[in-house]
Length: 490
Image (tube, rainbow, N blue to C red; front, side, top):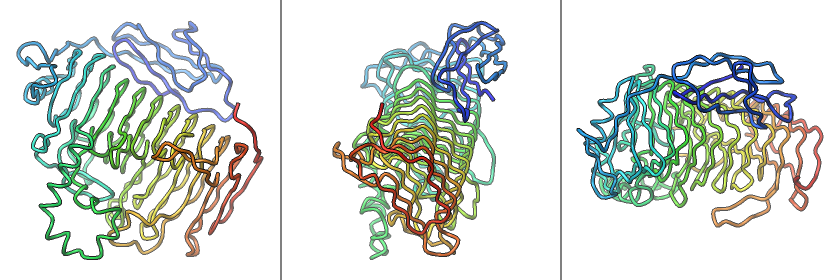
């Protein structure tokens, strides 16, 4: 099956990696060979708007028809009646919001080169936002620019948070999508207030909650640190709630006050050809699907202060009650320069299933590929397939942090994993930018019967010479190892 994404002049296609993958794929457009690629995606440029093209991928004989979009009317935010100024000093929130509000299905809001200082903005269905190369949508460092607080989720629980820099949809787990068909793209940058804004919000919230925090007493020690509770009001860079059919493409996304791209109760969100930057931002995750389905990430590079990707589905008991698994997630052709890698959990009470990852290079990461949950979390992670990746390590285990709240009746279930064709360095890349040796594979389930790590295939794993070359297992059942070897990376 070919999946397709189209603007007025560019069609991007991707397909799942076949089991017996060829060395190269050939892309045909209307029976004419257009390009070849080693990757499982391709972009065809300089096409005609509003035109149907037949795309074929060989040698798999995959075919589809894709229609390019219409040529849209450009809404230049610097022109009348908006007169936004890209001088890095003028606050443009009101002008930019008016341009977004005026954008219809046949329009595209356009930011030319410049630095556009703004507070929180809200997007709506059937619209497009384009940032030209050199355009920076820059969030302020002022708390008041992110009011009002809105329903959101953070660290596994529904709560009110400050508005994000870009906000799509309205969160309600009992309803479907209320924002759909949105394209955010270009060659520019969307940049948040980062660590400075985060610190202001944390200290302001700490003062507001001082009596409540004091009343918790020793329970505060169940949190990650003293900033955990007041830090939960921080907004994202881009927040999508109850959204469907959203694409973010080609941009640099950086310095949200915590996570950068967060999808909540959403379906069919694609992020491709983006750069994520959040160094020295606490909880600076890159891309976080949360209770969401059919989310795809590819051709992205991560320089993150925390997880490049974190797949989530809430804490018990709320996660079990909402009962919407995070599912059908596809991640491929991504690179991590530093950060924590790809994580599933620890918030996974609603379940995580059917995640496929291939052709990713996460050697320079702290955690590599990590599946985790606390004993009290409940829920499950199952049907995870990871192929042809470079990692420091694979971890499936319980953790003790982020463990506040009411416990589930039973521990989580971790089962049905395939790790195939993985090159493991056996050394992680820490936040201090140094390497430390570590077990190449570690799996530890729970002691309760039925909650072991179950049904795992480790096939064609290659361990780097000089690594610890260890596979550690505890409380596991049905772990199979096929064709384990040691070799220098080619």
